Length: 169
Image (cartoon, rainbow, N blue to C red; front, side):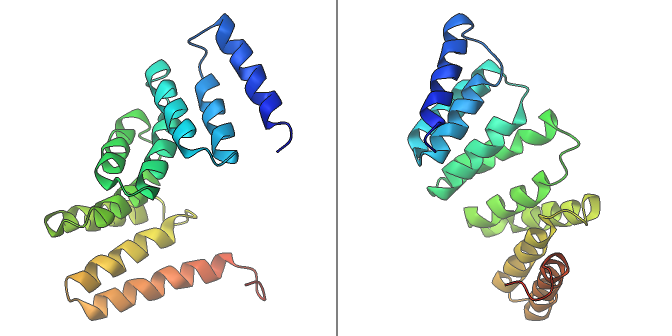
């Protein structure tokens, strides 16, 4: 932590020589997050998106920040652009499903189901796969489908148990 200011200074020095240095604002955003400066991190991720529109990581991390502060509409908008930028990033489907669920619009629940199932189909061994099952469990619960909800909850928990060393909590 003591060296984050030093790292930020080094990145700013790079930006002073090349205002469009790819990844520089991303690094400043990462530093801001480590310093618990959410607004600063958001600002830097937005600068990175402008400088490197092809890099999905800034968009993904910004989506997490805006979602955490409750702006689920912007979160979803940011996440929806990622599949075009990173078609091989299968985990995005889990996060799209969760953002759709968090949006709270029952008319979009089928999209959440579709995204969760797509993620589980494309990346069943992903560390994010339990999230897909949990989104399905929540949507099914909200739809009054108790048995389906319990099944998906159990599947998500089973995946987490497989990844947790025995005896760990």
